[in-house]
Length: 248
Image (cartoon, rainbow, N blue to C red; front, top):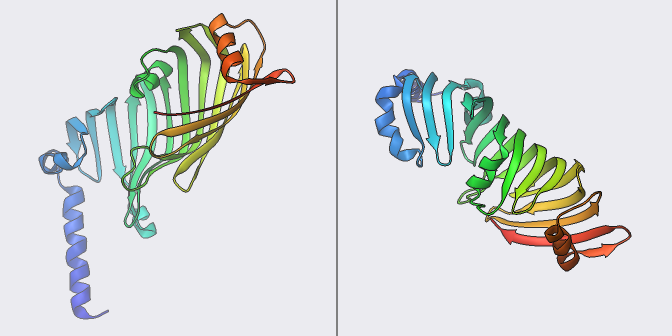
């Protein structure tokens, strides 16, 4: 290494050290406009290790957020922080990062959220549900210019119950997905309810989704559900075949 290269490396390392150890409360006014609508309150500590009493990233609100910079991730070409917080009164954790020459991502996400909140975030206003959604997501990755991430992981809805516009008991719903070139593909299954669903699902970054499902009726269902299946699904050998596509 030439002497001038060593000097530049040392200067860069020193500047980096000053930034990550500076009080985050002083840096927040400078970086807030670049946070894309994310609002922090009650901040303490530094960029290296700190906390915020409240974080609002519409429509998600977190309490008691703590973060810790992961310097070893730099060796793999990414900047990454470990996050822990309270979400709807329940613990949540994730790794948040940005590849130096790639996309933004979340990894190792674990959280439990009320199922009604998920529909509210998706702006689904005519359906009411019950139960909780347990998330164990290996990776969410946002491609450049994409609003929705490609997702690899699992989500479990228990008890899976629709209360309006009709009442429908689905028992437990399990969704397992993998990301494939920016598209989320997976398998959705329900068990223990009046409808058994076994479906292939697909979600594109622009919000267009597709469902290809085999549905078996295992109990009494509302007339509206039976009418929907007989109208839009094909019945054969004791099960319905439903193909459906729309956008979020």
